Image 1 (cartoon, helix red, strand yellow):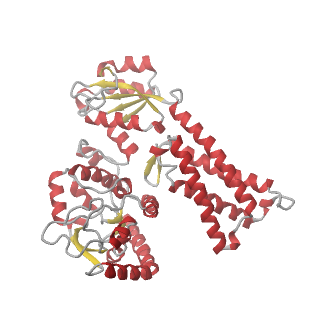
Image 2 (cartoon, rainbow, N blue to C red):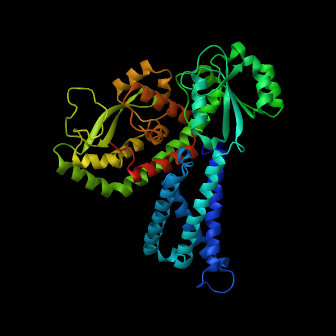
Image 3 (cartoon, helix red, strand yellow):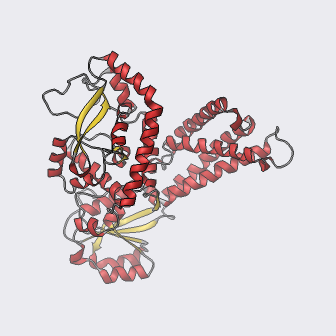
Length: 463
């Protein structure tokens, strides 16, 4: 895995993104050189033209990103890729046309732009075919053995099976006699812990993942050290699961692993720049969006009786409550006399304007005030109402760790999964929140904001 912006990406996916970036600019260079309308000599001697070329490449790559072509779980589906590649490049052409109309000075000649996009589309198809073939080839995958047969081993096995772009070929697992793998019956049990040396030698194992529930009891320390010296990669199961899924296995991880492991240290400097960054963005956004907010408030008021703003008590940093502001999207007093219920698809409590606002997350805009006042950050765990927070804190281990930082208008859990309706949903949400708190950085915040924009523009997951 490669760490970028405090998140982790498979090496193959990173290589794919880098190679296609180079391919994009190479194709545009070729298009400029073969353009019949080009002047004699080297066309790239003009620095302005180089910047114009960079703009075309950047817009194309951003449009491909927003079509999920670099999302790990979609990179191996060729049919999905073909459809989304066409949509992405068509979107890039439209965006470039609008930019050229508004800012003619940044326009690259139409000939190279058109030729470059068409050539890149053809090259992209070939590139993705090669990538799919690479992921399906056992020859270029690392034979991987899992030690353990409990819940953690099950999670690790499922992560390997669902992520071919990791480049791992699962050959089986070794039992530690403490549990049984009920959900991975199709995976071979190759023996017990004592058979480790023999199995690694016989099957040319390149990676061993230790996913025993109680590794202190039967962990073959000497054998694993010998394998590590021999060049075999040894990895702890919880760490592997965290890096490949972007979440921490809350239900099975030992608290000591979080306590003594890296991360979960929030320095004063880190808190300071996070506060300054959130305040600056919220201030600029408030000024720019003020006319839009006025129009939204008027639309809400005309659509249904009641105030335009909705206020609700939420739990913030340190478990302290604060008043959160949103645009009202439900009929006034829709939850009067009862605890607020999660919004369901086609919920009758939602107004006509409210349904549209929720689809594109526009109802969240007034939270800019909460950010300016210091109740929230731009990025962080989403806050819940007090009674719901206290109930979940009693049912889910480590839940109160979410209160270690300011809640956010968006967060890692929000861009990775949808709404939470059950306790199990909130366990998974907490797994993402803890991963964010452990790896919190300004780069990670920027990555989450980029993903948030993609979700907002596409209207994904709104209720």
